[in-house]
Length: 581
Image 1 (tube, rainbow, N blue to C red):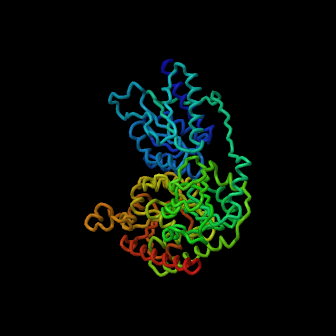
Image 2 (cartoon, rainbow, N blue to C red; image 1 turned 45 degrees about the horizontal axis):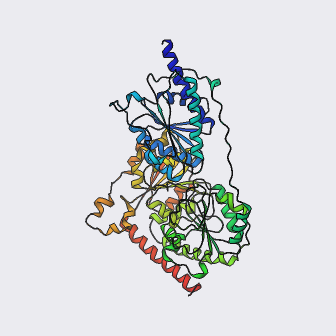
Image 3 (cartoon, one colour; image 1 turned 90 degrees about the vertical axis):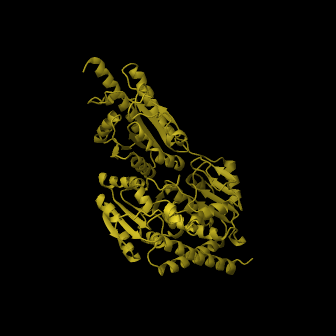
């Protein structure tokens, strides 16, 4: 190797090392890498940084799976995660997870490696236009210079500055993904030694906490004093502090909490689980249940019925907008405060209302739950019993990831734990069924073990993601409700199209779930009774375990209609008996 080649190799090595070191010093501790040729120097240096104990490195050969795995890591850790891939369509496979991260405010640092400028637009292999590849789905795009011996020191400072800026952009409100594109020339092999003494010192950053002006705090206290208030708690990525603040505030003021299953509040003091049932029946609440003011927290609710009720603007709605996103799907907000519940509620001390206000809501909640439990207790194992059993059996310190489509709706309707503590998570940004297995495994990688509740189509959609359970030695119990197709469509108007429905909506795949489990070396169990499911869920997750629960879509539709009829009748009876007009 001549001097010029040595200088080029040093420039390559030091540039990539500077980039990675700057990311690490600004809080990036977890990296998901998909192998490829153009990303060679990044991959090798990441391997060395893992050996040195500076990062946790996960290698996932499928870029789509890798991106969702990183999404799960970032959600569970509440910290930015770095994704790294080679050039070309490898980068395009990140797109679905980036869309989810964008809407869900999850900080991902996406590092795509690229061909240098002289190989662009001439038909070079594995080359696509990666400039602003993800468009508006990322908060910002950063193009790095090609590492070169000329102006090496100046470029290093520039690379370090942009890397630090990228992390700060990702973690500042509203949090979200950023895209870094790094073009590299051959030869791609880095040098053997890293010069750690040459690392660029990080720029000191200062975080400011939101503080309410005293006048505004006094005004809020006056507005809330002695009011019949209602808290509607939506999904959050990490709601531990919010859960404590909301629980304490609701208890202090005797306010009920309509708790979305992803709010972290199911099972907490004053939390109600039947909001979706109530608002499906009552578009207008009786006067004794009508709140005078509403505090709303978190993202868009799973319950469309509750969102539709909010649209009626029957009371002022104070939105606690922690992500500074103005993402109120109900368009009901009358006041927006850009701060979390944990930052605001403990600072307020309004005069509480009478306990009778809370008791009225609790009476309705208990009546509905009794009907549900009685009805489900006489039926064979179906989707509703699965959701109810999960809430009854899982330990309070468990982590449950829930797929979109039917599972999250079943959890919303039937998941009623007796105490708080079960961490329920999902991808409720874009609400897709892609990447569910991978995201759940990413969550498990951070939290140690967990459960995934999913449907057969979502399970099939991300089969390659299951390999990470074996690759990273993760403990995940997957509960697959297998109704052989798109169960949710059986509840929608298109189910009335008898001639085309099964072909274009039902889409039965006749999956052999046991064979799939064998392919990935997973434990397998087919369960058909509630008692067997209880016994399976009492056990802590060990390795990858797949539980198949066979159900039928026609029975699901029929039972769902009957359940709705029974619950609606009960709600009307409680209203007529206690709150006659």
